[in-house]
Amino acid sequence: MATPIIYGTEMSTYVRTARLAFEEKPAQYELVDVSVVRGEVKSPAHLARNPFGTVPTFEHDGFKFYETGAIIRYIDQVWPGTTLTPEDARDRARMNQIISIIDYYAYDAIIRRIVVHRLLPQLIGGADPAVIAAAIPRAKLCLAEFDRIKGGGKFLAGDQLSLADLYLAPVLFYLALTPEAPLLAEHARLAAWWEMMQQRSSYKKTQPRLS
Ligand SMILES: N[C@@H](CCC(=O)N[C@@H](CS)C(=O)NCC(=O)O)C(=O)O
Image (tube, rainbow, N blue to C red; front, top):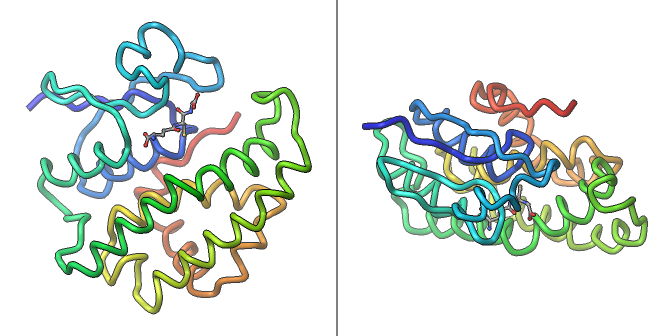
């Protein structure tokens, strides 16, 4: 089996999620850098991989596709090792629910409207405090829902690590670097989970270099 390729950049939360899936299996993969900051995601070469111009995209034995949710479910199904999808129907539903909340609400509020404005204002021509302020209620709602859905389980969707954990940890990594970091501490169960996730070797190995 050829080494699978993730096209994308280590700074990307979604790319990190795909890398975390391989690290947790564990399995070999290659990361081919396609930079968001330098605009390479909109280059003709990358648009040929993904016409929406986002990362990650994925290639395995000639099979090429994009969308993180599809990539990590494929990795989980194809590679042996740790299973990252719960058997239990309710835990699996909660895993998929958390992934959808991130895709539809949390990434937009936390990454696009808080993290990018706080940490990468040069990408958007300068930070807008009004955008950040308007995003905070939605970010709070997302965190409250993650905490509620998690409940008393060890991980976000039950007592085993799942794809949901790999989706959320890279997002919280960035939130924790902003002045909005204390929003996390409002949720004791989620905060304890977050402390635990940061100790995993997969998390440490995929830590992006920010310089
Ligand atoms: N729906 C896509 C979203 C991927 C995404 O938004 N990636 C970001 C980096 S974390 C990106 O490529 N941004 C560049 C852009 O939107 O121009 C997925 O699940 O893969």
